[in-house]
Amino acid sequence: MKLIFAIINNDDSHSVQTAVTKSGFQVTKLASSGGFLLSGNTTFMICSDDDKVDEIIGIIREHSHKRRQFVPNAASYGTGAYTDFPVEVTVGGATVFVTNIEMFEKL
Image (cartoon, rainbow, N blue to C red; front, side, top):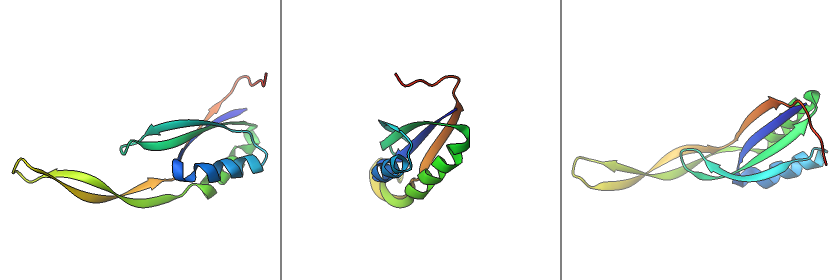
């Protein structure tokens, strides 16, 4: 048994959850935040048989997309004044962790 933790951008959360559950897997959804932008994410916990991990990761890969967005960047030019200049960064996609599970029970 494996436990998959998948951290997904909120923009892709619904699509990932729908695709995973349509494929017959059960998922627990947790609100989370993090990254250097401190933006909202969704963390999914999915327990599966070892031979289903690649299928689940494929579903996550298909439904979570990287995208470019502009964020403010405070820069100082030696005048003591800070000015915001937008900087383009890549956001989205997924971060996935897979761990071994010794025991799994649904009560």
